[in-house]
Image (cartoon, rainbow, N blue to C red; front, side, top):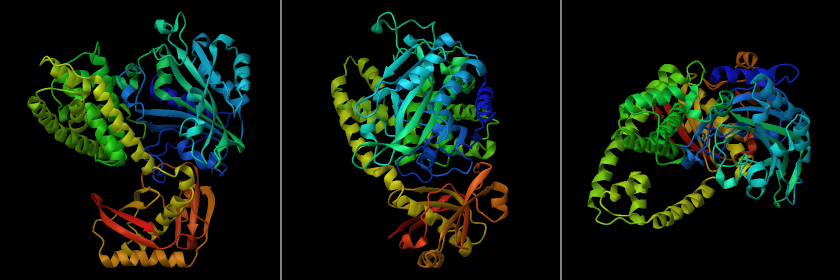
Length: 595
């Protein structure tokens, strides 16, 4: 099945009667107002306020296809099923239906709409722990649908519990989560893994089973004392990988053979002069995935750098460059650009890209990074020539400084008759990982509880900032993007020139006047055309649902926005601009704080 067909069938299934869901647009890949994460990694991520009880403009039943990126499995990319970028098909019940509706609906979608063979479906449920009992209800529903007991598996929190932060012990205070029920498709022509005797299980890593959907029954909230408390509303959060569902409909265990990758793989074959076979398969899968993810991230407005999203982007491009070098003997920026162009072509007519603008940006950013790194590879090779005796610590320094994968270093020194100490490399690698985790915890401390307090104020301040800029500079000013951490806000806007000190002072004065007036912030749900007609500002190029929330700050500001916001401006404190700079052609960027 083609990706356009399956995406459409899923949305149609849940919007049809009697399910009656409302479609919501895909949220941006780079979240604007969530300091706890770098990328949108699931469809539920932008919906957390509504899972916790806030009312959604479109009601209690929602559905969409969400662009998603996850880097935690980056080392797994190269097999037949793992990717960093993917689309997540999702449906949600916000305190409406629960297990008795969700499980039969998804089963109907799989077996009747997609016509998957029933005998190839296996499921899993939560086995229970000291706080939450075994999910006997889900198992009973699956049995009533005809799933035999020997194809219903029970697993613990590591496999059948879902929250953004993982198992219950790792959930921060305020985060929702709950047990889940996963669905797997079995490729019966793949041999059983001998490690598991005569019969594999769904969470076996041999590739025989492919997870194609996960219904999370989000009914708990982590308390400050570490316990779990039932939410006032029981929610359903379903996610199913579009790529994996397509592979199941084709009985194709290699997702890189489906239409969302086939053109990209063919381009890699053409530019490298190699075939998609043997050991080259692994290299091509990594290149295809990493450059696809890089294309989407660059189109989201991110440039390669050594910080946050830019660092992840740089790592993707450089890892792809190394694999290209292994594949064709060079890391050619022109080859990378051709591959990225095939990504844009693959997603033509999805609305995810602006064909001309994004092609120019992707070509410039990825081409430049590849060109720079090509020189780095050459320099790394010169450095290798200077090394008389390789050891694990030197190998790690080559990996960290020049991006040389361990297998390349091992191969190069094997040609010199030297054997690499893998254990020493692993020790150095683990030290680096521990430092990175410590840094990450510092960067993203606070979680959702912090997001609901400090960053709510900063987000509210961006509304005041946009209107103040329009008042000082003119109505051509429109938001191009924003990013908020627990310490500051960043706001990008259209304007051709650097702001003068006088203009910066005027903007600050206007905002602090509105704060001192303690203006009330009100919200109204209305149809999008009516909101625009009433003068509510939107973000140009953003997708909005048919009904939206409109937040007004007195008579000063009116914007279409999902929130969150404070109730009165007086709680914000003093607004101060700490930096103003260029962000792109005719785009300026402001950093500001509240004190």
